[in-house]
Amino acid sequence: MLFTGGPEELVRPLLPTWQPERAAVFGEWVKVAAARFGLDALPLVRGAAERSPALTDALLPYSSPAIAVFMADRYTRVKSARPAAVTWLSRHAEAAARALVPAALGKAGTARRQAEAALLALPAVTVRAAASAYGPAAASAIDSLLARDPLTLLPARLPVNPAWAVPAMLPPVRLRDGSGALPLAAVDALITMLAVSKLDEPYAGIGLVAAACEPDDLAEFAWGLLEAWELAGADAKQSWVLDALALLGDDTTVRRLTPRILAWPGDGGHTKAVAGVRALAAIGTDVALMRLYGISQRAKFKGLKTAAEEKITEVADSLGLTAEQLADRLVPDFGLAADGSMTLDYGSRQFRVGFDEQLRPHVSDVSGKRLKALPKPSEPLAEDAYQQFTALKKDVRTVAADQVRRLEQAMVTGRRWTPEEFARYLAGHPLLWHIVRRLVWTVSDGASFRVTEDRSYADAVDEPYALPEDATVGVAHPLDLGAALPAWGEVFADYEIVQPFPQLSRETYPATEESLKRFLGAAVPATRVLGLERRGWRREAPQDAGVQSRIERVAGDLTVVVELDPGIAVGDPDGLGDQTLEDIHVHGRSRLDDRPGRQPFTALGAIAASEVIRDLTIIAEPVAAGR
Image 1: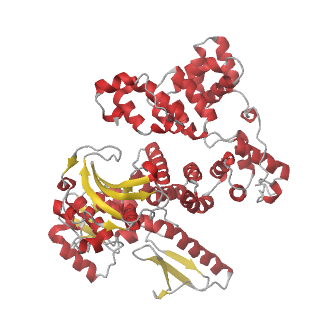
Image 2: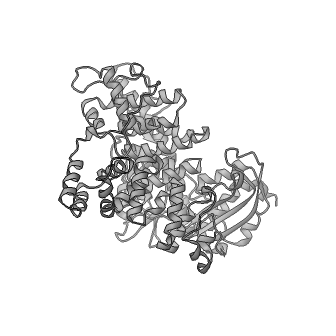
Image 3: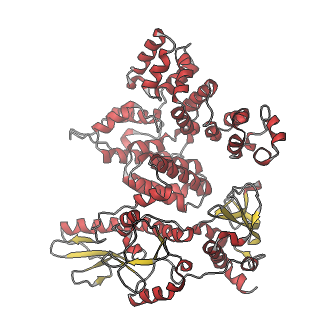
């Protein structure tokens, strides 16, 4: 790409005036150009942001009065660009206030309304300081703006409630004081409030309604709106319904919404799915963020996966954590006891819940005998326990696959935890420890250990092990264990420990160029290629005619790229037939859209190289075996 990698002496003169004929030419490369050329790239970046709202965030590093006015417009008028505008206003609050105060005090019209709205999104103390620089009259007028009753802040023209939003047909909303439910006229007003609300700036009346009404009913009401909207055809102009889920929803909303988010892109509903991701992030409970992280890891559609990853990164950044550290903290304990069990009380009988290596719950009686199923309840107390177990199975099923996959990827990528993190979020977690105790762990000093039934640590000869305070801990790869691997195999066999994924028995391969060559020319069904995505690979962005001709795996600072022919058609994976593995190579940067110099396969390191060969063997094994 010329602007990201072309000769500087040729590119820099083009920056002040170059604009493509089609806005579609703009893409993420604009941000690379901004980083490369700084202020000189501003005309290019501004033009890209004006023509492509998705690139509004490319202007985040820049600040000027003109950009402040532009961001006020994006904030009030372009819904998809609003999050980027909010970020810009927050980052450049003082400059934005200085630039927008004159417009907010100017002639009535669009520019004034936009400036007022943007100023109200800024800290009041910052706005007042900026206004004071324009004199006492300006300061007084701005004080009046800031003191305005938020209930009077309404759009110039209120929307008409859609025909499908019939108050009498929606779930009732009871008042907290027990005096009854909202009358139909109030429900109609609530619908209007939701229609004029924005996710990051709800109408002030929503808070009053939330304080007066039953939270469960409000969540059910919002879900009723969603179902009515979808039944009526899901008009994109009324997508405020998805924001309503965020404003009124709860963990039950999260559980209902997640499967729809994952399914919508396959039905042409990518925009709905991304809005759903924003709703999960806005609900913000541990369950919501856990489900959001799950979408970021296992969504089949690249756009949805990317949107979820961005939201998780945003939340993690706000907490000073990495996405992986946030994921550690989001694993729910489901009310389990410290030893990872749960007792179900049937009154006259009690049952104990345990978990297997895949976190599937099972039930035993008081004698320890495992039952095929929890008995049907015959009394009120038993009914509560039965429903508790039913909900537990459903919730854990969602969590289990993600956690097993996450720990396997931690082994492959070499992720490490501090001893305190390991003890708190892994070995000490009531649910995760069922997986943790079925794995061998490696220490930065070369030692290895396992977590025993009593949660102490033991080495390969079953002697107590003390974890050094200054060490780091990771899931041991067989290549980490070296000569200790056979001993660990014997320990796990003796204790009949079943592992959650292949670890001690994992196949390993030498990091040689010859190991790769045997896959070249192999014809692999497209669905098997797509199976690599469950192992941490990702496809390139769609190219001409929506075809993806490369799939990659990032390993530290390097990237393994597999070239596919004829490529995978987005929306019809099998449409172009089997995929020939045309070329396999290692690059020095993890960018699918440019081609830095190749690196030798050995540069990956023994573990990463072995895992690449293992993945390719799994998808191409019948072909590779016959070559």
